[in-house]
Length: 476
Image (tube, one colour):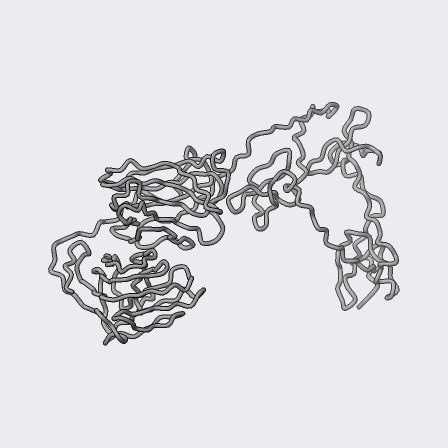
């Protein structure tokens, strides 16, 4: 590398810090003058009842014993010198028309200032949501966090035009931020990505553009919409549209260690969808939560339909729908039709004729006339009965007992689309289920270990109908 530069190519660094405040019409202070105020121009002090600029300290040259450039016959640069060239030895700068070596600064591990006031520092967010005398705040994982580098907050300075006096005012307000929203379910035949049903004593299906809870009679069953990763937040507001003409619903939130808080209940008797908003009082429930429960309030087992389930970190008073909730799906026309039935299998001792298993993560055997599905733990295994023919809509009937939660799905090989038509909780006895298939064409029927726990599933008497579940006449 060249070690000398022509004069026209040199960056001359002044050995003396310039008086930057002169450009603002004020002299520079003595070096011992204390800082009275800081703004984007620099640090200000007061001398002789006048504002003055505090000079920026000159960079301190690196200690000679750390100067790697000495071995090449050069000194090291002052801290902050601009990199002009890089070679196999390191970074080089220019000071006083001479090359000098730039010593890499050691990273400084910054203390998390907000831990002292009970909040962690932000891990990923850098967006400033609020600023007070404690520091600069962001919002992450449903809670406040301190932005690194935000401990010191400069208070607003108000002065006369001559800057002879200064008045410092500090305003402390309640920390308030723009709410964030989690859209959990809109309409259609599935929950939004990142959410799952961890309910009990009930099944969940999707019909006429709604999520429909079918609780077991006399058990007060519940849907429990779990956030798969992390939590919803702390406090906030839950908003949902509910129709339950013969039932009432209790709305709850649930966090770790089975901490549950009841938000309220719906009126029941609704013949159309009614919007409800429930505040989560942090004084009564000062915990984060990862589940929103919709529970049968009466134990009568009647359906509860839900649309537009949304959580906000803000209050219900400030809630503004983040999506268009005016859209009303067109209900499926229930014209009486003559259904045709396809018996896929009854008592079964091998894979039924015309079907292949396109499943994953499980073993399939046959015992006592039932198909026995043994999933591998952690694999979310499923049997996927691939048909040589294609079905469209209709309904599905089967008998099942299961050690853990099961998702029943239909899938199209051609389009790779699939939906969950039901989520069924564990049952140690045989139960008969009939579910509508609110979907287009499909050629696969899946029974999946919903939680990846490796619990066994038994299935028999599997029948497909071209008609609706409510019109199903059992051919078996």
